Structure formats: structure tokens, C-alpha cells
Image 1: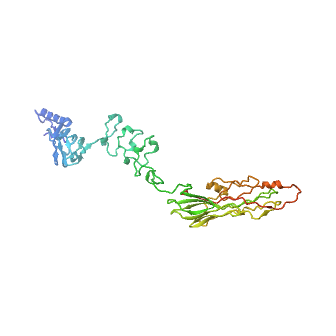
Image 2: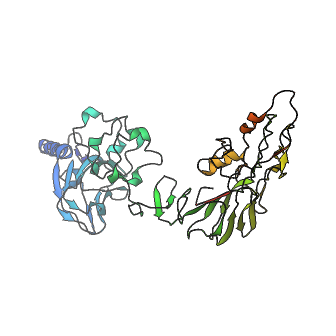
Image 3: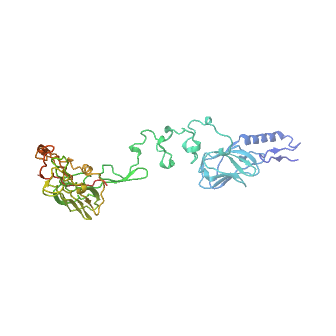
Length: 466
């Protein structure tokens, strides 16, 4: 019976009684073939754009039988192939480290499939008799522990895109020294990832803040724009009238009666505050013997108005009322606004009879003498409980709650302002003429002059707050 050959390594399988005298030689050949399959190494030359077919011959050394096959230096410019024979089962190591453009090379069985190289590296593969299969690290079982990886073995170019995910990073694993300059960019920071506890003291300074289009500087009467993140994105200076509550000169008006004139706002004034009061009425003295208090003069009408003037205002005519002085009566204060005149009426006087009965008391008249405020087009901005609060808010300066009598001739030494009606004083000098109980009644005495009331006022403040 003739010898046969094994299907995988093509070893000669000698029949019983055959090969007398040559059996030893053939056995040695088989041993060499086994050695080639287990430890053989051979360099082969590829064909650029063609196919290199590795052969496995019966009972003779062949390149397809080697364990390690190295490809000689070459640059592959187009698709190329290396094939091993069909129907053999064998393990291979392919060395492609000298191949340029290795992605153009496919290693496969003659009739089946194989794999295409992805880099100039060393590859392990096995043939199952039909196809050639690559043995890559991602197909192997088991894990690689940290202790099995040398320091600095894993570098940036060895980590594929997207290979490192948040779940694969331990708490505190990424520290400042491990982050290269410029490594963290805006696209790499998730929404809401940077919170206040993650920002160290002093970590954000002027150099860390993105510049805006706003020019550094000082802005007056500024208009500014702020975005949802609190950043200043626009700023510009404006021009405004005089500051609020700036009284006197050309920036406002302060007048005590009697006075009249024309008022115009400054060019950039957009709002005015107006305090107005008429002249105060005159009071009468008391009954000289009964001790009764005389009647006060009426307080003037008064009011406060906050008026928008977006297009400016003026000229506007005004009058400031005079106080009551014997024999003249107090007069109203007016401000002729284009939409309707504001009028603060004067306070009324006590009656002007020429004498008073010294035995029956005074000629006091109730507060119906008080004046009123009239404004057909504007609503008072603040309601004051009394004229004293009004004067305090308006800032009219010092005033007296009533006149002061200083001598037997009823000399009045202080005046009042802001539309206050005068308050009469005790008729002290009459006490010296009282004849005592049971004495005959005295005839009526001639009444002295009224005590003067407070002057009217008009105060205008430009660009005060609304």
C-alpha cells in the first residue's frame, strides 16, 4: 500500500511494510515539517495590487507551513491579498510591521474569508479549514488589572475616540496635574457640569472671563443690557436734566408770595414735582376781659403734584399768593399747566367789624375759612393730613405755628410761610383796665389790626423720581 499525506501539515503517513531502507529519511523529513509548523519563520514578498498565494506541499518544506510569516518592506498603493491553502487547520503569526499602507492588505484562505489589516502590527490568526480568523485583544476573555499595566503604558494615542466615559472614571481620579494645558474646551463641558462648589476661591479672575463688546469706562445716566447669565452686553451714556430735588438757580423754582412769572423746564427734564400753597388768612385778637381766644385766619389750600413732562414744559405762567395784611386779603397761588390750571386758594380772614364787645368775647370763626386746592387735570400725588406736614415735605424753611406777641402794643415779631393762617394772641394789655367784680360793663373797644397770615409758596423740582 502506498503512503498517504495528512490533511493539515501534509506529513507523509507511511503504510505498513513500505519504504524499507528509506523509512528513517522520510521520518526525518516529517520531523522537519513539524518543526517548521511549530517554530518556522519565513519572510515573503507581497505583490502590490496582486495576490501572494502561500503553498503547502506534501512532504516538503513550504512557506504556508511556517508558524511566523513576515512580510518584507513594501508600500501598498492598492488592494492586495495573501492567501493560504483551503482545507488546512493551522495557527499563524503574521508580521506586517514593515508594510506601509497596511489597510490595503487582506489575509484570507484561497476560497474563503479572512481579515483586513488596520495597522502595521503583528497579527495572530487561525484557519478552521474554510476561513482565516483574526485573534484580536477585543475577542479574548479575561481582564487586564491595573497592576499588569506599566506606568505610562496607556497614552492618549492609544485611547480611541469615545473610549473613556464618565462611568469609567473613578471619583477623584482626574486631578489638575493630569489635565494638559487647553485640554478642557467648552464643547467638553456638559450643561450644568460646573457648579459653585467645583470652583475654587479666586479661580475665576479677569483673565478667565470672556470679553464682551462693552467698552470699559464710566457711564452717566446709563442704559444697560444684561443677558440671562448676568453678563453686561451693552451700555451707553444718556443725558438727563438736573438731579431730583435740585432747587434754585436755573434748575428749579422756589418762590414766596407775592410773586409771578414764567417757568420753563430744562432741555432734558422729563418730570417735575410741584408744591403749591396760597396765602394764609388773617386772624383777630380775643376779648380783652373775658379771656376768650380770638379766631385764627384760614389756612390756604395746598397740594403736591408729580407731573410727567416727556417733551419739556413751558413757558408756563404762575402766580404766588400774598398773605393777608390789613386791609388787604390773602390771594391764591396758580400754575397754568397747558392741560389745566392748578389753583391753591387763599385762606379767609376773620370778620372785619370795627369793634368787639369786651364783655362777651371773640369773633372766632370755624375752620370753614380754610382754602381749597383745585386741579382739573392732575391728581394730587400725596395726601397730607395737615398743612404743617405739607410744609415739612416741601422744605419751605423755618415757620412758626402762630405769631408771637412781644409787648403791650401787640407787636408781631415773626412771620409764617406756606399758607398758614395767623393765630391771634392773648390781649394782655387789656387786663390792666379790668375794674373787678361788680363793676359796670365797659364799652366796646376798637379792634386792632389783623395778625398777618403766611405767604403763598411755589416750589418746582425737576427730574425728581416718579
